[in-house]
Amino acid sequence: MKLNIGAGYKHVEGFASVDIRPETKPDYVADLEQEGCLKAIRDDIVDEVVLSHTFEHISHIQGLMREIYRVCASGAIVRVICPYWSHRSSVEDPTHVRMMTERSMMYFSKNTIGSDGLPFVKDYNFKTVSITLIPDKNYQYLADDPQKLLEESKKYLNVVEQIVYVLEVIK
Image (cartoon, rainbow, N blue to C red):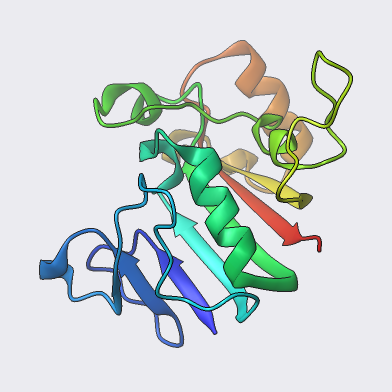
């Protein structure tokens, strides 16, 4: 099973859609802010998850990550696509509750140790497989040079428009 979480009207072939709005005709209506939001889906049956421009809207992100972990099989792939923290699209939308950087996903791994000396998370574990920066349309010429793109993004705003994380579920 594959899930497109926060699908809206963008239904993807081969993926079951999850959205809060019934008018988008999702396969599963779910409020992602609620504990147990994916309760209609059994444990360990999902092989792939996509969250495209959804993650940055969720306040209760730990609860959602717990649910994604619960429904995913070991080794499942989770793709998260968000606006990049230094792009205007990240800050101009008043419904965004978080900004995302290259280091943001490390907080969903048991390998990240908190200030108390214990793992930051206890009841789920995601390994970051890759992080890709997508340039703004004005910087497309840097698309084939990730190092230069990163360098420019540290000097100027609006260089990187999106960040794409690929995570693996570790059980």
